[in-house]
Length: 66
Length: 136
Image (cartoon, rainbow over all chains, first blue to last red; front, side):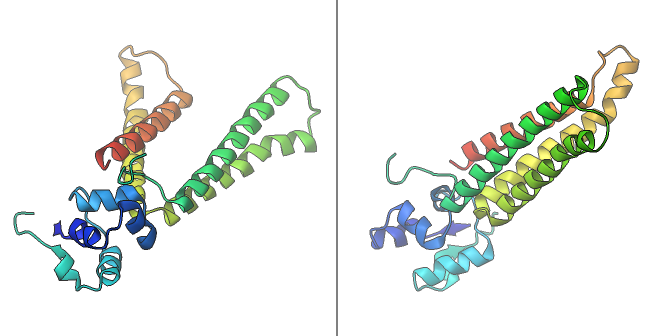
């Protein structure tokens, strides 16, 4: 799954730690999502989308080759 | 630590891990103390001896409760890491402990439950380390 998390975070000038704190997850989780090593649960994906004021499909994109 | 360096646990996880660690230390100490005092006949058989023998069980139950609480409240990536580590450690330990008696029949050295428990603990710790490294 691809995502725009790093771009959205950079637009707000937030560090991974800032975002992790807002999402109540670890910084490692934010890092793993950004680098595509870990796909978040649906509730966390919604939480991320709502935090950035976006629709979930505007933040996360499913690739057919997955 | 650089601002974007991965940190594998939240504050809540660290608090739960601290509690787990303290309970684990107290549990192990109670087991050692109970075994030593019961083996050396420091206690007269009866109520107090039973109490000393049962205390590690109660503390062990507290350790299990504390770990379950940690997993339930853990950050979701941490929970995935714990689940993978538990699956490997539990699976390998069960397979090894069931298969080893057959190996003993063809000459493998005798082994006890302590060895398989240690194997399980080592695999769990290795699994957590590997998972943390994988998602670094």
